[in-house]
Each structure stands twice: as structure tokens, then as C-alpha cells.
Length: 520
Image 1 (tube, rainbow, N blue to C red):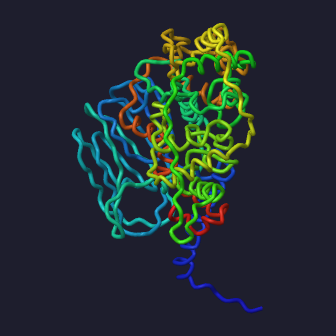
Image 2: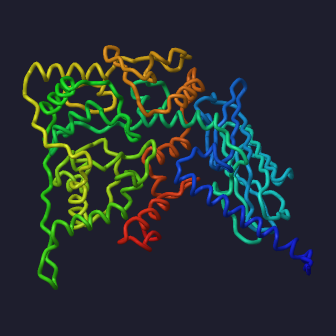
Image 3: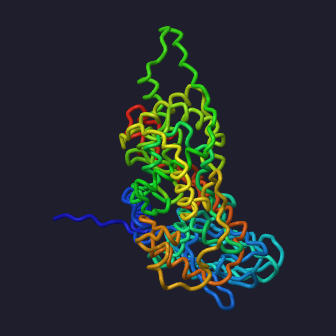
């Protein structure tokens, strides 16, 4: 049998490149499978981000950071760390895509050391904000261990890491090339607990000094405008509280209690004027106006292409995240077509506390979307009757609303925001079975249950956050706003892909969008 010797030059040159391409393909497929199967990134291979360890004199806390780009100023890096001197260490792998002459730089206020593959490539300190630049060095391609050590040495703290080479100019070391060989589930659990705590608006009842408060729940001043009463009673009973989208507290209201609360809202809510839906213009060639079905189909295509599914889901398709806007599969059971048209034009007119971006749409597009939304009736609810205007029933509804502290999250006509503070979460708690994290409710104590919250994660977060927290630094506040407003599910940032994946799904699902994912 004949054999052919493989040249040594080929082994040295081509084989490493093949291995690198296989690694890149593996990481890409791992990311795709993660999104499809909704696997916890920390349980998967090569999870994204750096493991950050923050330490002051008596406190240490870890967090998964997407990159190293921080401007803390005079504030603490994390609420669990007191303001003042602190240090931070980050470890990860860094993926270098091309060999060349590299140089590491940092915009810095503090003391910094950067090591790649055990070699110090940047070291320096500054007591005022400014640049430090390392020596140029030869860097091969592949993945290498990255270790970064920072120390605050003056009144303010800042570190932003950059690099450059003979192949590209100065740019930040981006999140998409920073990952770890193994996950850190216990660390990630703490911060997932923070996300669930905020997304379920726990901090609107359990308020602490210097802690961010979650955005309000919908303003109920105009809640009954064009509303199906049957939908409202069903919502108050919270029958869908086991849905993955459900964040409203579950109190176990029975039919009579739900009807009493609905009666109060119908008696006290104010009517909002709705915009008139203009008729569809006739086609210049055919002299015919589009049919209702044609308008509805056009609206369906718009729902799948203008970004609605970055925040919402419809029939299991779309984005489901802690701060998502909810499921629209049965939204047509809730409202009338004219309400949707008004909402798409001016959401603040109907709900001053709304989070929805006002998308630039034409009159035709708003009409088409309104028709499409009004046909989403998965629940097939009948049109209910307006609750009786019975004084006893209305008074009972007001009492229930007050007991349940609904006005801590909602603006409700005639109901004041609760002034009484409840359990102080700055103190260590072990009796979780008698807390809001219990599986049963206690309406007399105003204690709800949350059926889909990650209880263990919230407990881990609260245990890490006892004592008086430091004020949230402005830099992290900005990051949290991007998360709470769902900006990162349309726009790429850090480790988030934006709307890319949803666009790809819709291009495959809807024939009208085939080949258009790049433009969505």
C-alpha cells in the first residue's frame, strides 16, 4: 500500500488554521444551539464573558462581565461593595483570530496589569484619567488565557481595555472574543436572581435606600377603554400565572373577588379618546381598496419584520426574556381594533407608564397592524358584560386592591401608593416559606406568590445583598436601562445578538420574508 508523507510545512501552517476554523465553527454552533434550546450559558461549553472578582477590605463578590469597559467614577463598582478603595480581577480566554504584531492599551484611572498566555503585555497606573500603552509583541492566533488585575488608587476609578495590531487600528477588546472554558453557575445564579427580582418588580414593595426601582407596571387610568370585561376578570384571577410570560403576582382571587376588582376599575377608570382609523385608499390601477383579509395579512408580515417579536411572542415565536413585553397570542381577545391603532400612534395617550418604543409607521402600516393584532384570539374569550355598578361590590374591590398593594406597581384612580414598608430585605432571612417566594399566597398579609420566578436565584441574590447597599454606579445604571427597556434584543451589544436570530427565524417561517433577514 502506498502512503504519501505530509510536508512538515503544511502541518505547521495549514493544520493550525484548520483547527482554529473548527473551533470558531464549534463556538458558533454552540451559540446557536444555546439560543434554540434555551440552555443556561453557564451549563454549556465555552460560556461568554469574563469572571470578575471584586474585593474591598471585608467584602468579595463575583460577577460575569461581558468585557472590561467601566467608568465607576467615585462610586462603588457593585452595590455589595462599599464606596472607597477596591480591587478587581478578571479571568477568561481570549480568541485571537489572526497572528501579528499586537499592542494592548487602556484608558485608565487606577493601577492595571494585563497578562495574555502568562506574559505581561500591559502594566501601568494613572491617578488621573488617561492612556497607558504597552510594548508591541508578537501574537499567534488561537485562544489564550487572559488575566487582568485592577486597583483603585485615587478618588475615582476607570478602566477600558483596547488593542491594536498591524492588521487593524485601535479598538475595544470586544465581548464576542472573551469566554471561559467552564461556566460559573453559582455566580451567574446570583445575578440571574437580580434580574428576576427586578423584572417581577419586587423592589417596588421591598424598597431599599440607594437601590434602583424597576419601571412601573401599566398605568390603569384608562385601562377600561375598549377593553373586554371578560379578559379583565380573567387577568385579575391570573389564570395564566403559570405562563412563562407571567410576572404579575398571583393572589389566588376567586371569581367574586376578581369581579369586585373589575367593578372598581370600571367605575373609576377614565375613558380615553381613540383615533379614527382611516379607510384604505384605492389602488390607482385597479381602482379597488384592499380587502380586510389583505390588510390583515400585510399587518401579519409587518409584525414579523418591524421588530415586534424582539420584545413579544406570538404562538411561541419571538423573544421571551425577563423584561419582555409579553405574549400577544390572545391580544385580540382583550382590545378592539381602534384601540390598537391609537396605541401604535401614541401609546402614552393610553398608558403613561408604557415601555414600548414608538416605531415610525405610516398610517397604512398602523391600520394593517391594528387589523392583524385584533385577529389574535387564541383564548377565544367571549365579549363579557360590563360589571355592575354596585356600591358594595365596588367598595369590596377597592379593599382587595389595597390589600394586594396593587398601587405599588400600578397607577390606579382613587388608590394611593402604599406608604407602609414591608419586610426589610437588607437583613438576613431564612424563613422563605413565609415570604413572597413561597408557593402559597396569604391575601390577609398582602403576600402573593410568583409561579414562574427563579426562587433559588432570587434567594441567592438576596443573601449576597444583606446590609446597606452602595448606590448603583451610573455606568451600571445605563447597562440596566438597556436591559430593562429591551434595547439589547433589537440592537447588538456586549454578548447580545440583537434581533438577528429572530429575523432569521421569521425569514424561514414566513414565505413573504424569505431572503430578507438581512434587512429586518
